[in-house]
Image (tube, rainbow, N blue to C red; front, side, top):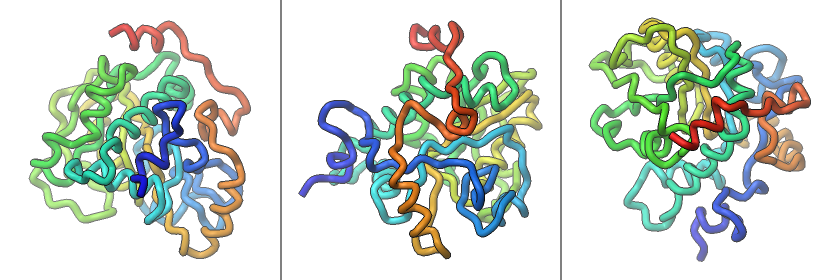
Length: 265
């Protein structure tokens, strides 16, 4: 039987098959912060009751619990899992392709005229695991777009974090930031507490602006009418050429020399 990574990856390229990714889109009944599917307009429950420290959060795809992309992300965190040998490579390609095309969109939404000065990741809840977390390998080693600007700017503190509660004290900055803009990369958004807490810690350390790109925005198909809404979204073809930001404006912001130069670093 083929592994998840094999059936998710098209034979002609190293990218995850677009037919297995679900493009988030703004609109009625969609949280304007995290793109969660809601019963009304505005913010979802988690964003409404949490703190908003990110200038913008951009999920690449929805991830439905127990299905393709979700299973792939679970597998890439278990590096010894032989059933998905290419999970890390596949997710690295997804991240690199998306940022190569859409970092300018994210930077513009964050109020920046150029790209981000630094790129970092949300630390793992386990300090020991964070030392070798595969997401750090993707952003700091695998991706040509990000590795020249990658820096480990946060580490897990000794503070006991309450799950799904905003608390920037759960992270300790590794240095002061002198007005630098930061792109935060995370693999999965559920409540957003980890990413928002990381943004709060970076801003307190002196970052001028923090935005986030998330590989997957987690959803449960069984919640309320998510199944019907996800089926509608699945009818809209995912394309690497379009992100949730440029789909709303109708035009992708083209990269300038600042982004092109990152591939030469």
